Length: 336
Image (cartoon, rainbow, N blue to C red; front, side, top):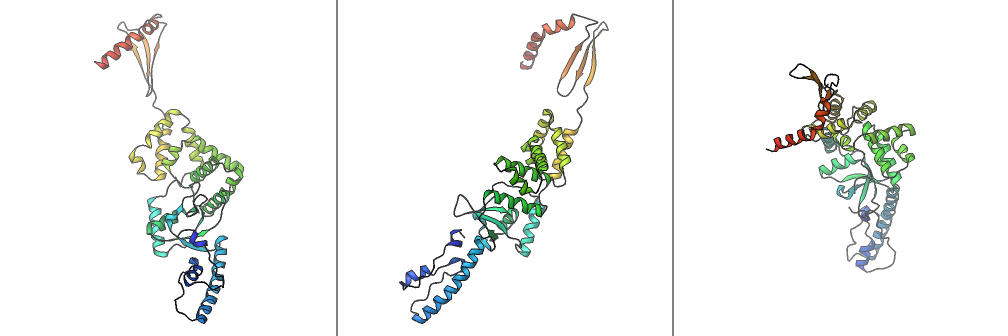
């Protein structure tokens, strides 16, 4: 159902009009008033029909008024509805998605979604909240029950956030990520606080946390429903080290990583970067004459040589002067 069909009204004028014009004037799709008068009816029957239509038209006007105020529920084609300005979810598990589809299949859609007329396309809508219900109803091939309300961008995101807050429906990291994306879109902190129902200090912590975490890692981990602020902050601390961040970014590319649950993905990354670095292996190079000339430290990322200048003061300089020759011999060897 295109949006223009919900609001277009052609009022009867009371003047005599040709039959074709009368049919056009008496169409009111919202109330199903699209049946033209049958030709050949007596004038009295036409007058009575016009009275009935006027009565029904008044009822249609009341419904349209409620609809414009967001008080009436209508059915819309899901394909006509676009997502919100900012998506607030980091994914939904297959189990929860399937459960919602089964629930709606068995009991119908009990709670309508909230949409607004799309600000850039008169024939479409934009959802404020109810993304999962919209997806479930669309999967079932049904019309979606919705409240249509004129909303500014600010009103839309406040409605979106408050509905999620009332249902305790977003995980901690989803709320943080939603807040950060709203700020990136240019919304004021006051609007974001109203949307999430948090104070200024809490909002600052939430946005600061997201700024410390690579977006790729947040999105790869997902909702992590059982993980709260403290664990996420700990992970952010661990990822400050570039080497650990690189390991985490590599780990999320593994196909087996995506096969885990969101909580398991968080724990896997946390365990990976929390593991203490392997202690370097320390050995001593001893010359044929028994002199312990070089202490060698070998770790995952580097090997260091410490020359004991007390035994052979000039040996370290001798080796340093020949580093280019040694490197050339090495390159020659690996290319042969």
